[in-house]
Length: 195
Ligand code: IMP
Picture 1: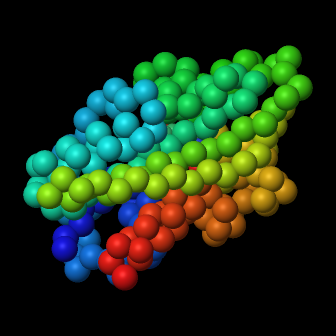
Picture 2: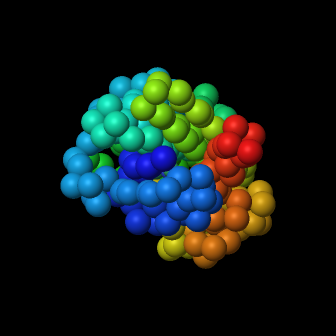
């Protein structure tokens, strides 16, 4: 069975290959197949958006496809920025502006609990679909800490690592990350099905 990873992020691709590579004969990125498929993320949930992306790639290639959709959910903000994490400060705004808006909206909040969530979707040409989710818990800091990672990492204090994701090395973050956990959960489901 051939798998297309619906991402051009080299780090994500490497992580996916390491964790579930053994279940597929050949694995490609979109780039390797010269495909430009980037459907608009119109879903209201991480699951809907992950499925939307994977289905589009399976439809275009006739191969299995794996996608992930992720974001940050803050308790005191009723789960925001959630599925809008990438465009919290508006379309075209960058990580710095998203972080500034999050800090502003959290200014008077004492309850600062938050979690990152990742939903991975695997779609098959025969219509079969497998979904798995991973979460990592922590809280929102009152100022940026560390320069590592991307997105909201410098504002996210990890309960597991006892420091911000911005202060963690990539290896440290990978061991507890929402994406790593979602892929591990997917692997469990595949092991159950493929033996
Ligand atoms: P995507 O699913 O990779 O498009 O990520 C959606 C958005 O969620 C990103 O643009 C980031 O703002 C945020 N996000 C997702 N995962 C992480 C993470 O591991 N660290 C920091 N921000 C993240």
